[in-house]
Image 1 (cartoon, rainbow, N blue to C red):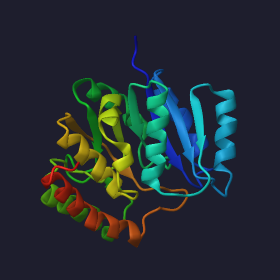
Image 2: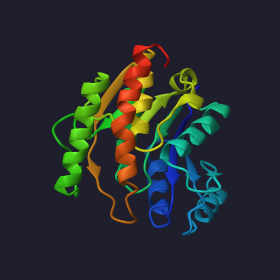
Image 3: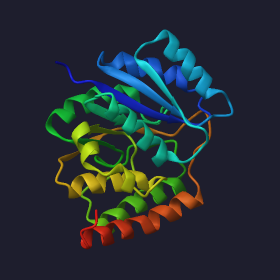
Image 4: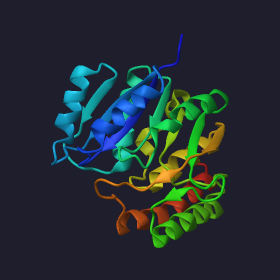
Length: 239
């Protein structure tokens, strides 16, 4: 039996991007389905997702009452996927910074791994349209996370991923603390510490054209202290 694969896409004000990116995702492989996790977007993204779902059975929608952060949106999507028996669960942005054309490469790579991470830095720097300050912040954050935690990844903050369900089942999702971009570090760190096979594949990351970035100073501060918290929890055996 073919493995069932679900692409979890958190949305907040992605009305322009959503109807463009969803068909491209579904076109990549007949096994792929999409779950839109919408945080009650004021621009009507949730209603649009319902309309897409009504005409395409491979599209599903999970409505949340308010904007509560990236990590919580993904956790809600992971629980939804596990409850319904999906074998492979993807994380992916709605804004085309994660190009759907890479999805077949993830599907091939996951055959020999438990968690596949799309890396912007696996072979040099593959980032398009970022200002130099944002790029330096990202490169520095990944080096910082690697040195503090020991996590053997070139891109631990990237959000284009594919998990085997066994990884998400092994992680106590109730104990995941991060909610911003450090969520990506924490999930990979927990998987690594549990002995799962992590594999990076190179991707090209293109900054969004439509909509606004969700990055802010609070998210950066969370990431700075979270890596030390992870290191401490691992040291005392509490992960």
